[in-house]
Length: 159
Image (cartoon, rainbow, N blue to C red; front, side, top):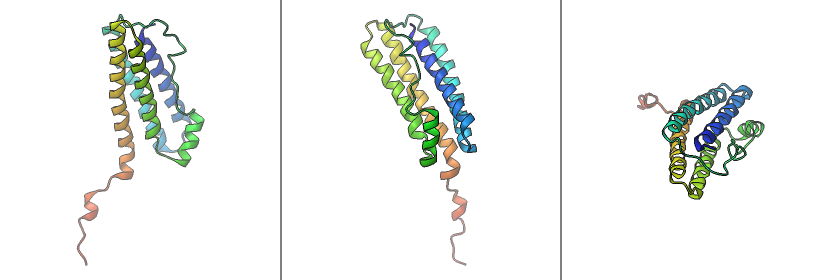
């Protein structure tokens, strides 16, 4: 199986996961976050398709559909329940991307074909870029809660 086909399949499942969370979320902020994460996964898929064209020979023997699936740290229901207790979804999204990076790096270390090894390392690097994007999305959604405008301190003189 082509390693990029595997990665694209994982990203498609991840996108569907975030879309499901968006549909189930009650808070507008959560809907926005999941919507942006799903859109990010769509963009990530497009980048992987372009990379696949450049690295046609990256196949891995023994790579089957069972390995090529999204394995979230929490089910959708568990995540939404956890959100009630701890609204910090950043750790969850980062954990999923870090899991993907380790997956590709482990496969790369086991690959015997040089082209496949390069492809897997390229996928790990792409996941690192995507992790940075997830971090930026989270910061964008959280900024209204954490931003402290300087104008609030413009009138600090006693009356």
